Length: 237
Image (cartoon, rainbow, N blue to C red; front, side):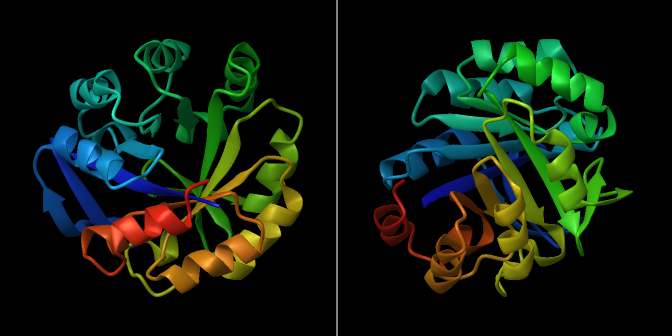
């Protein structure tokens, strides 16, 4: 299993939120480019970048995203506010290894199909899940759909993977939603990337045991609950 540090961008900073709530910001660090470089130097072979401002319509950190991509410290999967085919192409042209599609992809299946077919193996679907129900627009809207039904609907598309975030566990470091992740792995024809609630190496080992291909880790490495170098060494691929 591959461990991937999260670089969540808000107002030009790297942040970590608790429970997907913008009024519960627990970590705020300046110089995202330096932080990306730091994670690469610690041994991580991929980074996960999300523009939270773009995802929620609050603004944009695209210049910072571009700087991180151009520096090339490590391959990056990038998402947050990706709403057009031009957005996808620009990110790929700027060096993103993979583009993470969320809100529009979930709300507009025809658009997702078009983009996935135009960029086979270069787009990942992100499903932010609260108690099994998929949310969009920066966790503000519930689609009224179970995540497993979404997996079934996209199974034929040439996606790079499926990122499932247990929003109800996000930032709490109290363990991820293992039954959810296990069910998604069983249903998905794509590699499953898990996020939300990871607080220890034991949590990561449990995800690996359930067939999860990669895990995106945020709060635990920013607060020191998990030693980044130990993490990168144990989960390198």
